[in-house]
Length: 117
Image (tube, rainbow, N blue to C red):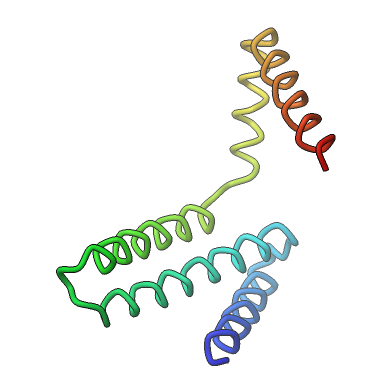
C-alpha cells in the first residue's frame, strides 16, 4: 500500500508543478504518471534483486530489468510529442510511398488481430 500512496503523492506533486509552470496539459500529466510508475516498479524489482544472492542469475536479471525500467522512465519523461510529430511529418513528406506501405501493413495487422477477437 505504501507504493501506491507514494505513486499518488508523486503524481500530485508532478501535476502541481505542471500547473505552476504553465505547462498543464493532459499529455504531460500522463507522461509523468507513466514515468513515475515505471520508476517505482524498477525500485521494487531492484530491491527484490538485492535481497537475493548477488551471484544468482535471477538477481542479475532483476538488476538489468530495474536499470532498463529506470532508463525507460527517463525516456518517457523526456519524450517530446511535438518533436516526434515533426519527425513523422518530415518522413511522410520525404517518403510518401514508403509511408503508405507502412500504414497499410499496420492496418492489415491490426485488422487481423481485431478480427480474431
